[in-house]
Image 1 (tube, rainbow, N blue to C red):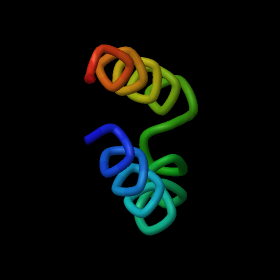
Image 2: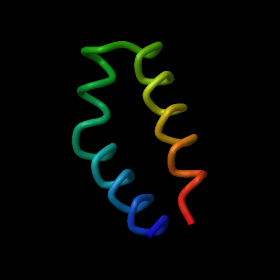
Image 3: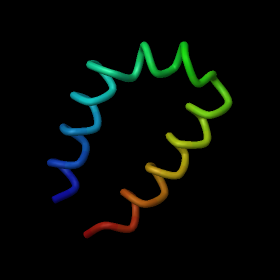
Length: 44
């Protein structure tokens, strides 16, 4: 399951991450990224 999450995360970041980063800002990107990383880390 984690491998799928990583792949989907990479795909989504590649498609929307760059433009979203410009709109929302680096601080929001870091907060969202850290939260997602913590959640993914607890998955089996």
